[in-house]
Figure 1: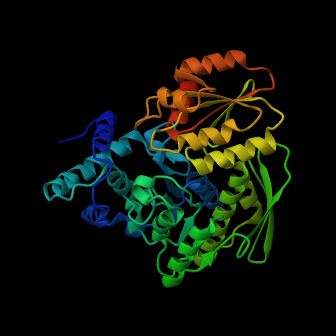
Figure 2 (figure 1 turned 30 degrees about the vertical axis):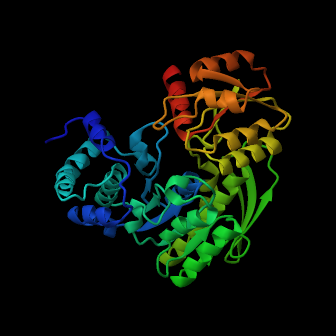
Length: 431
């Protein structure tokens, strides 16, 4: 059966099951083998973490591009359009290329279905990505894990460097209900004698990672032990920090807000410098500074408009909501912040809401949206947070809040990456 349109290609991909009962890499290995093992032609950096994966991937992309390399990035979920998940030098895959690749994998998928080895949606997208990157001959690919690490379909690769940004509670149904269990999955991307860079991890997570790294003789690079980061004062929209590694010192500025972005950028820069040493190229210092200074990533405390100030942030679990709370306390304490929030039902909604509602300058409105999975209901919000405003329709809530905004107020929309994706698209469509 030939797939002729972009819509048909997406329908085929999204029509696949998302999860199989047995988490295994056998299906993925079988699938790429049938496609000629395109991943073997790629030089890759592998990135996992509860939060910060996307931003770290973006910093790595821009660092590599600043040295003149052609760079592929594989990320999820998408914010504006499906194609952005597979990009080269910031350009998402073209519709016709996606259709052609779906036609290529389609007969292989049907063959595997008949053998009881039918791949999942994410496995198919991952196989398409490997094939595309090998065809267009990227110099390097930055591969973001979809879920966890150990059993993730991206984990068939042997990267040049592995990165673990953060470890916190999320996706408990699949990864376990403790930080130690989740760290076990994240540490699953560590490969034999392959350098691994970590961000600020809780002790129990770091212990798991260290154990795995020692077992596999993988050199481990930790903040403040192997690379040093000092946050500097910065009064504009962004962050500043001093970074030291390998006898060199860099004073750096970022466009993205939040101390977590300093952690992400430092992780990315360390991985990049290790890669440069491994690959035998000497990075140009001023280009590195410029690259980190221009990196953006949609939906990460992203300013949609300045007047009025409207910001979207993809804080979608408890750890991310605490980072957001810290940012509001340190940078926006003298401003009235009106928050519009919607959360998926399988997230820690109550803790996330409580974290943000505790701020004296915050006024919260809880809402719903048409999510890919069940969304926390208004009934739940009203039972647990009777003092907070609720509104079923998020567009109606948005328009109400806009009318109430004073000149110095901020509207912050948060709670789910899928929710802020809807909001971002609404802004694009409405102009």
